[in-house]
Length: 147
Image (cartoon, rainbow, N blue to C red; front, side, top):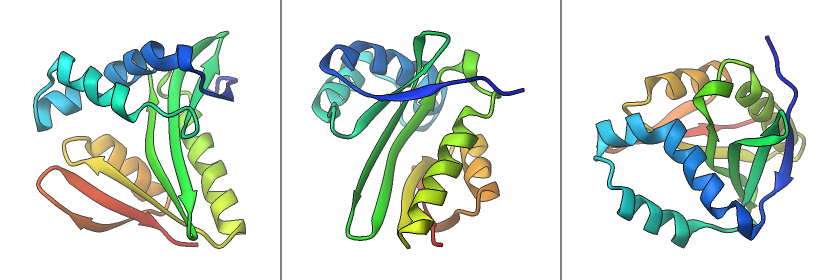
């Protein structure tokens, strides 16, 4: 089943909603990989918050996800795609990533991202989309999609 959604540029007022979305989507994985410290995670989020990079995913009139991308030098970096648990399994992430792949391929760009090793669901998702593991460290798989 699919659900309609739209993507809008983040604004300063999205700081807290975007943190809550990331926490909802990633808490279990961050806890399992390096431990969750609410204060430290919020501090990192505030430092990384950039309305030029972040977009909010909206469904049913409310923010349900976050997409963070940076592009340059022929590379599209996906810094994060987070969808709250209640809205997962509606193909929102698949449709967003398929769109990014189509756009990057038309420009002959490469897509790079990283996935927490404990998040096997995300790794499998990206492998199905055609990503390959480029390298890994203790915590992350670095993945790449070449057109």
